[in-house]
Amino acid sequence: MYLSEANGSFNVHKFALDSPTKVEALTSFKKHPVRFLSQAKDGTLCFSYAGNLYTMSPKAKPKQLNVNIAADARRNNEQIVPVSAGARDLAVSSNGKEVAFVFRGEVFVTSVEGGVTKRITNTPEQERSVSFSPDGKALLYSSERGNSWKIYETKISRSEEPYFYASTLLKETPIIENAKENYQPEYSPDGKEIAFIEDRMTLKVYNIASKQTRTLLTDQELFSMGDNDQYFSWSPDGKWILFDYSIPGVPTGEIGIVASNGKGKATNLTESGFQDFRPKWILGGKAMVWFSNRDGLKSVAQGGNSQVDAYALFFTQEAFDKYRLNKEDAALAKDLEEKASKADTTKKKPTRM
Image (cartoon, rainbow, N blue to C red; front, side):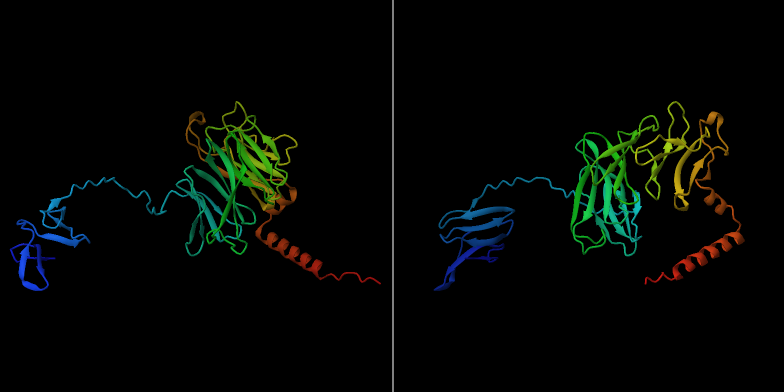
């Protein structure tokens, strides 16, 4: 059996091996050629013609097969999306070699040099407020899972892998998991506690070892226009927290401070009656800087835009006196401190007899 154009177009032909000159045409299609000829063990032929399949039993005519193919539209939902804009919640590791960020609701970590990036989360829910632990070995973030915001921590599983961006195995653990709204988690400077916002207007601290939670601030000190809009900052020694103070009934904000151990009440540090916000610790916790519109140009009735300036407040007389030194006195004070420090290290220890 073979295909031949002997009669004008490809058709099925045959001849006996002992009579090669006696050729017999088995099909006589005219318009299109016959293609893809094959034969079963029982002698049944199969071929295609004009886009259709045919079978042909010995000494019978070709029979067109009724083939129905159920096709379903398919689409690849995965695509590579370049990260050229839209990254948020940037956080730098303590060693300065990694940057964590949130893009399209997922947590990523990238190397500062080299551009290697590792995807940390892969969930249908949104993640945000990512930050590194003080030692850089864990990531803390909030995630909207199970119809409420919860707080999770991810660590590198293999001790021989020092960086998240080059890690292979990660372990995620729920830290705060309940029916309330929990977000904006922040490690304490020693990494032993986590401050977070609960239900928009409550600041709490979670102790990792004891798994106990204490309340520092409530709606008497915090006001929210929406979730994830509070601001607070741990002191370098972890004993205090600065925050944007919203006094009930007063539209403008102040700067407040509260002890992180939960003892005592919050204190209003600014008491300006103007808009004071975003305090940051400086000088190792001996002072703070913040923004205020108290001296800037303002719209009528403070209802529109206004100019803001940066201000500083010193918590110790020593810090304030050091700040007021001129360039020459500051250089002299630095030299004296270095000499005193060097003298302390060169003192000989007493010899025991």
